[in-house]
Every structure is written in structure tokens, then in C-alpha cells.
Amino acid sequence: MASGWRYRIVSVVGVFALIVAAVTVANHPLVHSGFRLVPVVGHLPFDPAEGREFLIEAGTTAVVVLLALAPLYKPRPHRILDVSMFALKRTLVGLFALATIGYFDYTYRLPRATLLIVGSLLVVAIPTWFVTIRSRPARGESGRAIIVGDDPNEIDRILAAIDIPVFGYVSPPSPYVVDQAGPGQPQLADGAGSTADSLTYTMDLECLGGLSRLDDILVEHDIDVAVFAFDETDREEFFGVLATCHEHGVDAKIHRDEADSVLVDDDQVEEIVDIDVEPWDWQERVVKRVFDVVFAAVGLLFGLPLMAAAAVAIKIEDGGTIFYKQERTAEFGDTFQVYKFRSMIPNAEERTGAKLSEEDRGRRDPRVTRVGRTLRKTHLDEIPQLWSILVGDMSVVGPRPERPELDRDIEEGVSDWRRRWFVRPGLTGLAQVNDVTGHEPVQKLRYDVEYIRCQSFWFDLKIVIRQVWQVVGDILETVVRRWKH
Image 1 (spheres, rainbow, N blue to C red):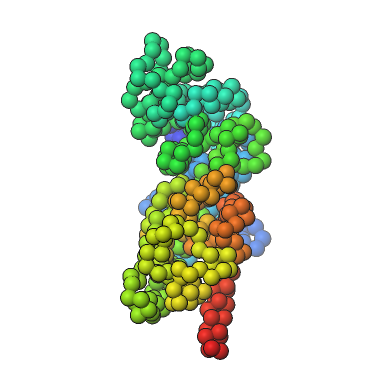
Image 2 (image 1 turned 120 degrees about the vertical axis):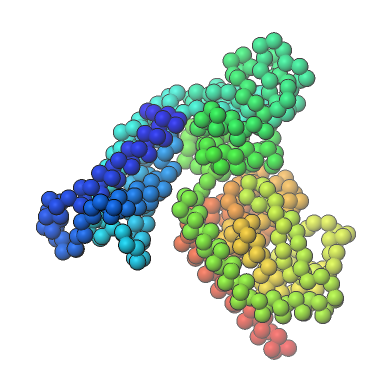
């Protein structure tokens, strides 16, 4: 199997050649004659392309299909069936995009007959091509791997269990680092230092640098796999490395015994398991983001009268600020500022500190104002969060973001709470539509992880419909109760 940039070049050039060949065949007169004999679709008209028109047709097809196949250009030793099915799926995505283009007034769109012929050829040729240039995974044939972490004992354990050739290791400063490196010992941290003499891996594993150089190391050495060996899954370092791996398309792995804080495939039986850094395909992420932007923009536009009414009511009641902001945990453990209409008395947590509202338990919270109770009951206090969705800090659907202080408290009792950090937090989620709050962290986590595993645009849409139905019901209930009183 080809590796690194050689594989990428071979795969892209091969796909491009197959696309041009398919468009050429589809425009041949003999193929047109044979196609007319095919039942049902044989009547579709042809528009043979020549010269400039052919170049634009072939170019359009190449650009769309090559983009759809982007995840396949990285060398990974998947099994033949997995490769062929994944290539088939991506090819169909590209063909669907081409068919969509055909609905627009585009001068050089592919005629339907041409598209059918091109599609029939590519769904066979492209999977075959990727199977041809790849091979079945064999021991020691999984690309270039590095170990990232600061626990020497964990590195030794990984080296004993892993069957991937390890190119070297990257480590942050750690208590195992001493000031001066001994003879023949590699440096472990960003500046200088070495590991303890007794550690096995120091004899034959090269230190590539510290975490500050991780981006450069992944690119310079064409790394395919990063195996995590952290003493503690610190938010800043552990999830920062995850984000870097995600950005560069590098597979992240971890020892199964240390996988309680990350999202992994439960079906894997190996000791070194994959961390599911990116549960969404990139096409699904684009669709999700477009939906988020449209939903937030429409919500803010039509919610302006309600926002104005809420602002006036808050100001009249106690003269305090209309909005309040809080720091919340974002994707990969980062933080962002969330804005809501103020529903509590000013400085409500001055004495108590950060805590979950008793209203989430169905009790009365004395810190909540009279206007605030109405805003919370009707969910109108959440409208300003549409701005966080619009700018990309949140999504419409996802695990509800908690405050970092509460996250730390919950983690003490729920060890795998950080699994929620693998997707962008949401305005609503599977836990919310099932009336589960932060007071039930274990059950909430179960719903959040279930959402991450099952997420899709249609799943999001079902959750949004359920949430909108609940909001409408709560508003009507509040209005009826006020009317009766």
C-alpha cells in the first residue's frame, strides 16, 4: 500500500483519470446507441459535449466528486469491504450533488442520460480503484504513529500492546522530566529534560518535541495515528491534542483501560482503541451548520417582538440588567460566553456560588424573579442563545453546555462525563426533550452519548420538532394559567 503524500497523489490522480474517462465514454456515439436500448431510461435525450463544453462538463464532475471523496485520500489500512463500501457511499454523495446542480439553470450541467452513464461507471470504478491501491490491514502496516502524553509507564504499556510502528513521542512538561538530559536519553518536554533511567521506551523511542510543536510534527513527519498516554486527562492538554488531531485528520487512539473519559466504539476488542474525534461526516456537518444558521437567523428575526417585551418586563420589575452572561464548556473542553435574559435577582450567586437551579428539580428557587419564572416556563429566556448558535459557539441540537465549575463537580461522580465534549453543545438535546436535567448527571450522560452515537440531520430535526412542541405546550399552559388568575 502506498503511504503518505505518495498515496494521496496516486489516489487523487487516479480518481481524476477515472472521472475524465467516464465522461468521455458517456459522450461516445456507440454508448448513446446502446443506452437507447435500456428500458425506462433509454428515452432520455443526449447532448453530446465537445471542445470547451466537454472540458467544463468533465471539470465540474471532477471537482464535485473529488471533494466528496476527500476523506479517502488519507492512507488508512481498512479492510477491503470497508474501503469499497465507504468509497461507494462517497461516490453516491458526489453524484447526488451533481444531480442537484442539474436542477439549476447551469449552462454546462450534465444531461440526465450522461449523468446516469457516468454514475454507473464511477460506482464500480472508484471503489475498485481504492481497493486496488490499498491492502488488507496487516500487523505493522498502519501508517506512521506517534505517542502523545506525559506518563512513561503508560507509554511502556502502549508500546507493549500496540501493533502499529511508533515513530516517536511528543510530551508536555511532566513530573517525570528532570532538568538535564542524561547521555543517550531523549528530551521529553518543550524545553529540556529527560525521562527516568528505568523506563523501557527511553532506549529506543525518539522524542519529537513538546506539545507546542505538535502541529508541525504532524505535518513534517506525515503522521497518521496519535496514541494518547497522559497521566491525567487534563482539559487543556488532552482535549487540545484531540482538537489538533481532528484539524489535521490524524486518527486518535487510547488504551482501553483509560477510555472512560472519551468517546470510543464499544465494538472494538483491541487493547488500543480509536477515539471517535469526529462523529459527523463533513457533509453532515455542513448541512447541520446551514440548518443552525437558518434556524438562529429566523428565530432572532421573528423573536424580536418577544425579546423587546421580555427586556421591558425585566427592567420594570427591579431595574437591573436585562441580560447576563456565563462561561460555558464548549466542544473539546474549550469555553465560551453564553447570553440569556436575566431570570434571577442581581448577584444571585454571590453567597451560594455556582449551583444548579432548584427549579430543575421541580422545586421553587427563591433566587428566581417573578418575571424570570414566566421567562423560564415559556423558555423565552433562552432566545439570546440563538446568537451563540449564529456565531458558531453552539448548535441547535447537542448536549446542553454546563458551567466549567459544575462540570468539574459532576466529573467527580460521573467519570466519563467528558464524552459529552465530542460535539458542539446545543440549545436543546435528547436529554432535554426527555426532561432530564443536570440534577440527574448519569441519566443525562446516557442520553447525550446516545445522541452522539445516533446523530444525523434527521435525528436533529426530530429532536427540534419535539422541543418546539413542548415549548408551544408550555407557553399555552402559562397563558391559560395567567388567564384563569
